[in-house]
Image (cartoon, rainbow, N blue to C red):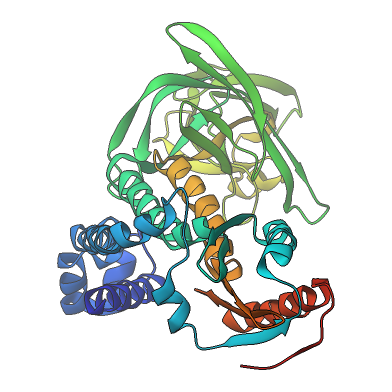
Length: 441
């Protein structure tokens, strides 16, 4: 028992540490927050990924073993009580009951026996009457199986720990970005950023996003297809908090972004003549100017350059001059006027492409945890709200009738059962023919 308390306190204390110190963040953030010395200490102790550390799993394993040992140590005695097929009246237990009531009835034991036995059997279900030299004894009980409730709680905790250990050892958490129309078969693990191959492939068919007037995202969704052995096995659209699940792996919609376009349509205006032309500029390919005296090249794309919107960095070689870099912005078509060159450039259009950002989790112990929670609820209800009730009754023949002694015991909720026994005593007294009186014994 003392070891159990020590282990529970240790788990509670370390869980508090794991809550106070954020888990699985970037190493630079920990280094900046705690400094070099504490960073090295915490890293050595696996504090930054505490719930997957060997010592936390060791604590769970020790508590599991302790629960198993404690349960098996007490189980034989409890099982001996639970497994009795035909319980009998025990004189020793009857004498040890503290609260007993005594009353007298003018009827003989032969007359009241069937009445008492029928009444008690309806309320406590299991009822066994035995003849004695001067009358009879009766033993009844209800809820014998409830003594196993505490073992249901123990078993649920063991299953819960087993699920947690299984998830920690064999599960993973990671992320993946999938461009529209592309397929991936691996992800990046969250804790070390290493690639992790999946048993199947995942394709992003389409990504859609809607926005508020302020520009903030209102809703975004991804259409995903699972491909296994070259065949499409599942297609589903996901949104935030509505993941796609396949073979124990869950894909959650977590983010999105804009991909660099593979080309842009550039509008070219001659400053002297005002003549306008359009150039199709593929990414990283040189496009000659109309007079063949230079070239234009799209070299970089930024989705939101200094809050000016989509920005395109261009390289221009014009009329024998050295190549120079400058920026064009879709939202500001006259931005290039400040350059004061022979030509005025602006972005006419470009194909927009997005990628969907998915959080990926796999936890083989999750169903163990769900089962354990259900079993735990059942065990708590049985343990705290139900009890094993036992009733002892002895009827002895005396002058002019019978003397009745009634007593009861319960392993829990004793006060409630004592009131129930008093009610049964009054009912039995009124049930007896020609009742003259009663006395408290």
